[in-house]
Length: 157
Image (cartoon, rainbow, N blue to C red; front, side):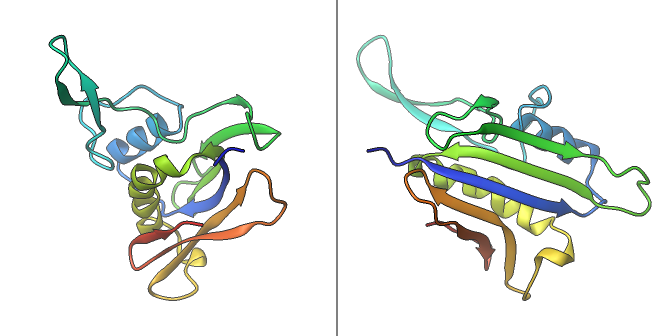
């Protein structure tokens, strides 16, 4: 048994994202190079053993939602797409993601999802404190659970 979940997001982001924000989102989706400075999720601490056998903390930035190709446990394909509106004056960014995620990744990925929720178009806001992002599904289940951010925090399964 494994603890892998399907993470599916269908979200429209407000059109007023800065070029730096778009570049960082694209990097997290595996669609572009890593920006020199990360602002959305600024730290990726990992504990490693150094040459003397001591544990040290290093920063190891990795794209959080950029896996592509065949899914390992949830079947189907893993994708991440960010489309620019055809008419930038009248539309929002279209974001579609289907990834596999382990609970160990919930905290760091939650930072990114909370930021995305803050930038979500109003149609994803059933209330002032909740943003609907998509859904999750445990890999061995056929039941989907809503994925939302409530009061700035991702509500994980």
